[in-house]
Image (cartoon, rainbow, N blue to C red):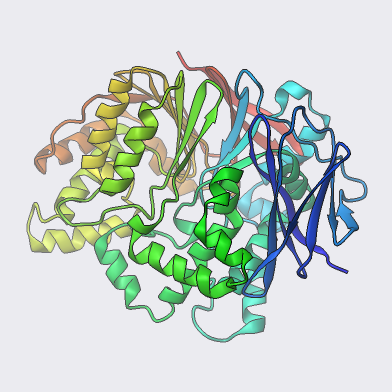
Length: 515
């Protein structure tokens, strides 16, 4: 009898449809039963794993509960768990988004709580069944590092050592290991239930592939010389497409997707691997970014990793094709823009200045010796945010000011949470990180220092010494930083709340109106 390996995960939802993703142990027909109707899809197979995404269409009302059958046998809901429901996108637009990033999937025992803190997403999943409807988010936005391929959990390391003795011993090597990595990340009962009933939108960051992924051209050249890297990046991008990206797409977009058609026709792993290899070698061959209309708001999820242009002297966070796409999305009709960027756009000003300075030196501003050491410095302390791609930062700054409407940029990556407000336009940077992966005490104090005026002066001075012009506008951190594990909510039009957890209890850290 077929078994459910992962899922059901409620992914794309709009006002008339919902899409549910599953992984099964064997090929089968997946049936979703909801409100007396049945929706079916056969599985497709990739590298010995079986997947399906089932579209519930022509919906006219919310669904109080649904069940999953595999070849007629019911496998969901789980005994003792609340029903999984589907709330369609409200007619007047999205009311609340939950968001965060950077979640390690280590055990929840006392030892790992001591080293990694409580898992706030797990606590959130435990909290929602008893919460009032107004507390429920319409969408969960996961902003990167959903899995850590370069720093696996003890259980994942045990799995790796049981199946091979080759390099890399401490990291993921292939699709099979990625499949297990995702299984460990998303099958805790609380997480599984949460993902079955709250729609989700996702984008990757570096650890989904590897720390510092695409930080610079020298980094790519160094990794190309590592014997196992090509296999790893192909597996990582292929697994991302299956486990994360496929559910980001609407039913209409998936119907037009040539890769999915090949997989449904039985082309399996070869087609996925060829796609992933090309996506890495030629980023313009594929688009990971996507956009959704959420009523009066527009969500734009931006690929800030694979779409980079790494040309020394002309580094860009987004290559020309991706930048043109972003301009089109920003210009589309909407009362406000919600931009998902895994890495923050507005860092503390002092850190911004240091990254400007480092980029200039990496481009040879102070000579060959400074260039070599600056590249080492860039990689060592992760100087790779929008500020380290200054031309793109300035282009996006001018674009967002020109748009003349509220712009809310949701980000993660930095392992602390804060709010920053631009001095021009209605531009807000809202950071929530980590869900579960706290900074060491020393790094916390280092980041606290960057909030003060002396750090701003030092960063600005270094940038000026390297001949960097001042940014198009100034900004300041108005809330935070907070360093505990957290998840945040954005209640439209203008309220942000950050939450922490103690055990299974969720409690607010702080809340602010964006005015």
